[in-house]
Amino acid sequence: MNVRVRVPTQLRDLVAGASVIEVSVGSASDRVTTVATVLDALATQHPALERRIREEQGQTRPHVNVFVGSDNVRDRDGPATPVHASEELSIIPAVSGG
Amino acid sequence: MVMTIAAGSGATLGTRDTIVLVGTTKGLFTLTSGDGRARFELSGPTFAGEEVYATCIDTRSATPRLFTGSSSNHWGPVLRRSDDLGVTWTEDEQAALRFPDGADASLARIWQLAPGPNDEPDVMYAGVEPAALFRSDDGGRSFSLVSGLWDHPHRTQWQPGGGGLCLHTVLVHPEESHRLLIAISAAGVYRSDDAGSSWQASNRGIVVGFVPDGEALEFGQCVHKVARDAADPERLYLQHHGGIYRSDDGGEAWTAMTGIAGMDFGFPVVAHPTQPSTAYLLPLESDEYRCTPDGQCIVWRTTDAGETWEPLTTGLPQRDAHLTVLRDGFTTDGQDPAGLYFGTRTGEVYASTDDGDSWRLLAEHLPPVMSLRAAPIVV
Image (cartoon, rainbow over all chains, first blue to last red):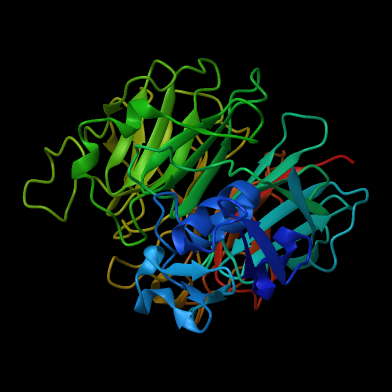
C-alpha cells in the first residue's frame, strides 16, 4: 500500500520540494499498517527526511509531532498507531523553540 | 545521492584571502576578505534557525573544504560540507555521522570537527554529544564511532557540564598522528597513543574545586579547551573551569599557570599559529558571573608559555562591556602575523591581524556566537 505523508515546509528541500510524498509500505493488497512501519519505509526511501523525525534509537524527536489524520499519535498508540490506506500521515513541528 | 542547498544571500565565489566562519545559535555567517584582511564582508545567515556549534576549515586540499555541524531544535543535528567556500553545501542522504546500532545513543549535537594529520588528508575527527569521538577516512563523507573511547570504563561515570556531556576538543599530534588528545566536559582530558584504540585519562595536576577531594581526581575535570603550542608539540595550554594550565609532556601532567590575578574562569584558549610559547586567553570574571570582568574586554597574551601575561586592550571596549566568549568562539587564521578572531554571546565579532596588538569590530548584532574558524584561502 502507499501512504501519503505530508511534509512540512521546512523539510521540503529534502524531497525535491514536494508537500506530499507517497511512501510504499508492505504489499499492494495491505489496507492497514502502523506509523512505525511507515517511518521505517521512509528511512529507506527518504533517509534524510526520516532522521529529521526520529533519532537513531527510533524515538520520535521531542519537538516533532506525527499525526494520522487529525490525531496526534502521542495521544493514541504512538508508533503502533494504525494507519489505514485512506489516511494521511502529517509531520508537523511542535510549537517550541527559542 | 546527495542533497545540495544554496547558501544564504550574499555568499559569492571569488578571489578572497581570508575566510572566517561564524557559527551562531541561529545560523552560519561568513566573513571574507580579499584585501589582506583590511576589510571583511559579512554574508549569511546560511542554515537560518539552526544552531551551529561546530565549524571547520580543512586546508589540506587546494581548495579548502568547509564543514558545519549544526542542529535544529526540531529536526536534530546535521553535518554538511562545502567544496566551493560556502556557495553550496552538501548533506549526504545517508547520515554521515550517527551512532551505530547497539550503541544505545542518539546524536544530540556536533561540538567539534577537526582535520586529521596533514599526510592523511581524508582523515577527519568529530566530537559530539553525548561525549564520543568519530573518525572519518573518506574526507568527512562518513564517520565511524571510535569504540576504544566509547567503551572506556569511565564513560558511564562521566557527568555533563553546563553545556551538556560534550567532546569539544580533538588534537592530533602533528608529528605522530597515532597520538590523539581529546577533552570532554566534564570528564577531562583523555589521550591515546595508538590512534584511538585505547585511551587513558590524563588530568594529573588539574585541581577541581567542585568536589571535596579535587586534587586527586583521575577524571571528572571540567576542561573547557586545550590548545597546542606552535613550535613544541608536547606543550599544551588548557583552560579549566577554574584555572589555567600548561603541559610540557603532551598532557601527561599539568602545571597551573599564574600571572592573571584572580581570573581562573574562562572558556577558550588559543595558541599562536607560528610563534613558540605564545598563547591567548579571554578570562571571564567567575563561575558565578561569566562575563568579562569589570565591564572591560581584555585578551591576555603570553609569549613565555604562561610565566607572564600581558593585557591586550587596544580597540576592545573597556567600559560597560559585559561580554561572554565561549570555548570555540576564539580562533586564529593560521597566518603570520596571526589573525585572531573572537565572537561573543551578544553577537559581536572582533578581530586582530597583528598578533593581538590591536583589535577591531568586524560584525555586531549577530545571534550569539558559538563557534569561529578562520583560514587563508586562495581561489
